[in-house]
Length: 128
Image 1 (spheres, rainbow, N blue to C red):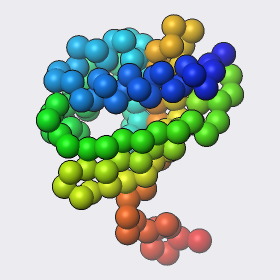
Image 2: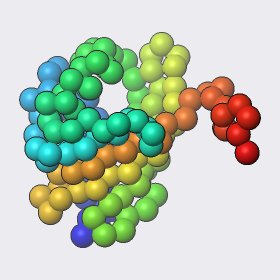
Image 3: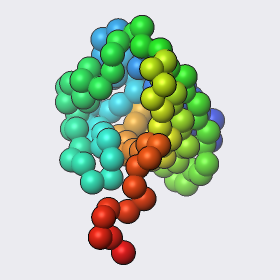
């Protein structure tokens, strides 16, 4: 069972790790066999090595200017949902829902993002 405090601690650790150079701290955040999905329809990165490659391809490095706010909106069993907002120094921003499933040690075994960017269509053209 995860608590709101467990999810909040994990979110804080995630932001700290994102701001650090390299990916050495991923093992503190994720289980060795974790699944990391950047959107609900993307394939998951599987395991620490693939997650590390994904992180390095997505971020600019420890000097990247951004502000992140996160608030836990729900927790049930071992899974929490957080509303996340990121504003970059470049002016880019997005809002996101993160679905985070933790193991008993507080490491994430499954992570899924539901990102939304300004101007993004709500449904695909021709959708219902």
